[in-house]
Image (tube, rainbow over the protein chains, first blue to last red):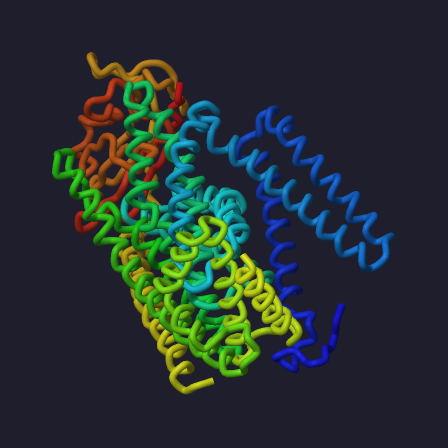
Length: 460
Length: 163
């Protein structure tokens, strides 16, 4: 592990072994412990996992076993090989845990209607969730997040966050139903439960992404993207769960498919962005703003603020959704849309305001860094390129011109060059603000990459 | 770092703090709502005697069979309350709630002495439905004050199978 570099890192206090990794490991350890406890308690008190779960879970067990084997052997190897083997082991262990959680999720959520219905429901939710993730990723006009991280965020929301809340919500709900007066008081208690537990479980994913992948977590815009992705993943699994549940309830009346279809529309069309995606995006916004603030107090306050808004938004929907009854007439169709607009619309509007301001803030600073880079005369960014790179529309026009000249190949070449130049500007921005702990060589490497890509584009 | 840039980040930070303040207000309103409907210090110590939950025949309005906690979906059931177990001056009601928290049957509110003729409280089949909905049903006998249920005097849970 490198402890000092020449030239030094942007933040001289950084030892390149940031404390945030320690925090991330502690958080991940807590999550694993919570999941183990939750699984045992679910098994003992809620429901025995059918035998098929053990069968399907064998692959997960095998992955964990193989991952552990590689991990143990990694420490017998030289330092260069050790890192590679530890990464392989981590990937296998992670896949094993995710697969096992997925198996448990599938059985918890689908045994009511059967795997066939659950599969159809999941297939119905996949395209809408994919569209949601694509839209969310494209929100960052200047510096798109890598698909692998967006998908990891969504997978956490779908698998880990849903597993984390099962036990806590069951205990809370059962206790409240035994102790409280049914009606608005109980509804309020359950709304506090959903708002608090679900947002904490989802928010944990965004916190871990921030701690582990800070180089891909630039600012408020990135936070909103990752938060919304976690929310979309959670919404996917919750939609499958609700659709299968109402199908099994209403199928004996002959309207199971209609009931499931209404759930699909409410959660995958109307509530795709106006729901979990909006709530958890606020957590991401808080973490994204905290990432760039100086001082521990404002950082902590920004993170707490994000969680508070998310919990309040989620709570308000669950607690007061019955204030807007849906009449069993044709107007009911309008009323459903109005209810969502009135109850979640203000939160979505507030989030869009943060997003637009964040995009503007990011864009202005990237343009500033591009001008400074161009002024150095090192050739990575030329002065005449700055106006083009500063505007998403001008960048698109440049790519389209390349497409007309050289087809898809030309389009993607220009796209890679633009991305590398924006990466360089982002790196400069963070370095200027002392928000980065990679050595200066990383910036030089980015610059070399841009110049190499420029030659590659010119040669084609 | 320019002052403008710094101010932009502060604007974002302060905007988020304003949103969080609104969030705190929303959660406080929720807390007040909870306290209003779940008023502290309302325990009278009175317990309602729920005789049991029995299979119910809507045609004859009669219960049959033993006290049960689980029913098939095709069965209709009813709770039987011994209203004489309650002081006559209490205003009470009895309600069924289904798994979604919707009310599925009620008697009262009235003084317990006025409800002696309504000791059997059947669960209602939803409109346009052939069967009761499956899931967990809650039956409660509540004390009413100022038109608001403030205390549960008796409670029973019943499971309706999906099949």
